[in-house]
Image (tube, rainbow, N blue to C red; front, side, top):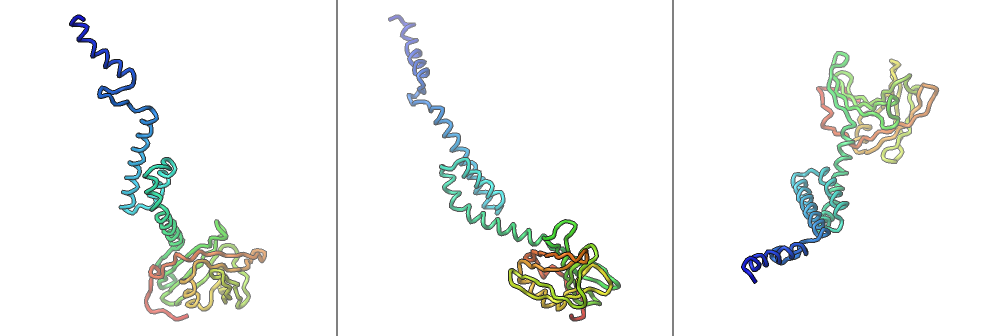
Length: 243
C-alpha cells in the first residue's frame, strides 16, 4: 500500500460514517422525530418559565392565557403537569376579580353643584332594559334636600298614583318598596325610606324592580347588578336633612 493510499484511508472511513448518519465521535445523530421532540420540549420549557414569571408579578390574565396555551400545545409535557397544579386556582381568582371589576365599573360617583347647593350621587344604570331604554337608579345626598333614592328614566315616566308599591326582588327574595311620583312631572319615581333601601342595597348583589311606564302602561322589569357598590366612594356632604 503506497503512502498516499494510507493517508486517505481514514478520511474515507470517516466520510462513510457521516454518510451513514454517525457523528465523528461515533454517537448516532438524532433523527428528525427526535429533533422535533427536543425543540418541542425546549419551547414548553420557555413557556413554562414565562408562566412562572407572570405568576410572580401577579398578572393573572396573562398567566391564564399562557397556562392554557401550554396545556393545549404540550399536553403530555412536564410543563403541562406543573401548570395543572396551579392553573385552576389562578383561573378562579382571575374570574372572581374580573367580575368584581365589572360590577364596580357599573357605578358612577359624582359631586356637583345642584339648585343652590351641592349634591353627591351614586348612579347605576339598569342592566335590563339596556340601550336607550335604560333607567337610572340614583342615590343622592344634597346639602339642602337631604338624602333621596329615585329611579330616573326617559320617555313620559312611570305610572304611580299617589303612593305605589313596587314588587321588588333582592337576590331572589321578595320585598315591597314604597314609592311616589314627583309632583314636578319628571320621568322619575322617588323611593320612600331611602336609608332602609340603601342599607338593603349595600348587602345585595342584584335588585329587580317591577314598574309600569306611562308609555301605553307598559310593564317593565328593571334589573340592577348592584354588587359593586362602594359606600366610601359616595361622598358625604355637610349637614343634611334626615329622610
